[in-house]
Figure 1 (tube, rainbow, N blue to C red):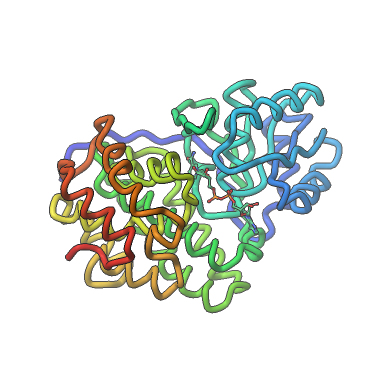
Figure 2 (figure 1 turned 180 degrees about the vertical axis):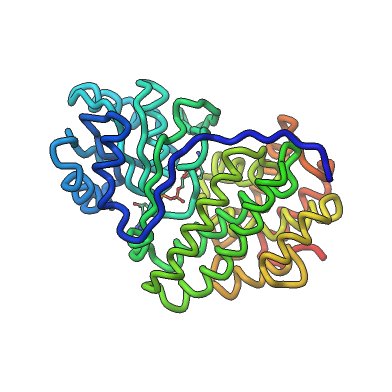
Length: 353
Ligand code: NAD
């Protein structure tokens, strides 16, 4: 048994198909009288439906959420929240919408109720990100951790299969890195392995039958577990590389995670054999990195950075950026090996054996 420190983050979680009907009660239980509902323009209808459920406790809908939370959007949303006298936020959507709620909460200290509709996991973390002048800065702050999360798998029925798959692989990445985190613990390990198992099996069933509510429930359950791991364990090489690729080249978030994960696991495999055995067991495959590569291919996920729009000319710069500020990783960082990993990921080659 390794040494560990265990601490839990307090988030109330309500999980059931149809649980959005509890939204007004959950908001009231936090003492929120004037909730502002947040969404992307694309999910305005869903947000309006949430506003209707909240009845007189809703003071407006702000539909300006955008990927990576541009600071000007967060400022405009805070100004709107002030103008309507909001005393709480209801974020209905994926990581971008929940990220916007976090940006407002950081500024105004308002409590957040999150209603996630993807598998990204932001709802379970005290991590925020704000983008200013093209640079995304992230940080941790207890004020941005949602107080209540309402998981309603029915709200994920319309998530397109391609987005479900990449979002699910993004979630698996949180759990996989949690299993070799320098600050992990046995409870997070259990959650991580169960989260990967639920998502790997659930995604295969969602790809075959997108309106299978049991499969959707399994995926959202897995997303909750994986998000919890992300919120409590330090991430390593994989998340660093994805952050660099997203931040410096504007590559799409979930797709980048889907492409990179088999390669970053292959890199770390020699230094984290126990974690790799647990990932492989959760996937039901003999090997963690090649198993994930096979799963991603079967599910039709992108398998190369090239198809996400990255040019070969950017490989050197990304390698340099990945080696800048030091961070914990089970295997020491070698420029040559990371350059090799990125070259394979760029071309779509299988992960290094
Ligand atoms: P997203 O929130 O950007 O959503 C992508 C698109 O899908 C949006 O247009 C959205 O409206 C739409 N969508 C969402 N749910 C849908 C549904 N059920 N049906 C149909 N369409 C739907 O994507 P994401 O991958 O959830 O979030 C990515 C962002 O979240 C990134 O900026 C990432 O950095 C951030 N993130 C933050 C954390 C954290 O802990 N802070 C964790 C994970 C991700």
